[in-house]
Image (tube, rainbow, N blue to C red; front, side):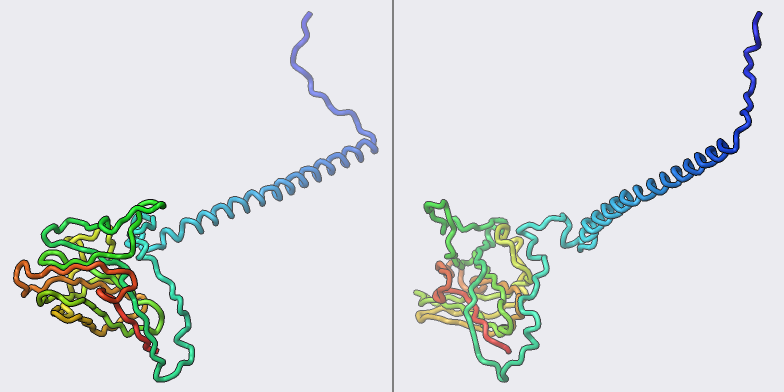
Length: 277
């Protein structure tokens, strides 16, 4: 004989008053545990939120300056020797203009030498000269001394780069000092259009800065010559000059050459800076 498999619902037995109290106490305890658990979970979530926020803030601080930089200056996002001059040069002379000074100013001066001397050749417009002629071998290896070759012919000219340095020394005087020559020769001195240093590792006639003005013709003869011309030079300015043969010189008659030693004023092309304040 088989009984029906349908289970009958059970009805709880009547609870005693103490069991009712105990049951209500258990329910309150469970409710408190649940509320405590929710509070703990809420408290545990906050550190995670703070960590995520700090990470996002750090990433924002790292990458935002890159987007704010001028794309024309940092197009490749890297600073190299070729574009380092585009970085802003902070002033070393902050608030110097507020210092009380004597009037008229005390005259001071110093000699400034070119930061580079380079050759370019009209007959080989893509040729880049290097300083291998002055290199010598030492125990430390092959070195290139400070002496630089100055050479001027009908096709070869020499480019000199200066930087005006120091504060309140903005009266500049360019000098060209040359020893006696066997025959009269006329050189031409030009100012080139350059406001930043020229990269001498790639400098050739084709890529040299254009001429903006002819400063003067310099006539060499049987006596020593110290030609000079006053120029205005603002602190940190780059001044670039080209020394070549005059266009009026007969073919083959212009050929001047010397080695310009570091901090020697003859023979040399150098600059004297004098005080303005």
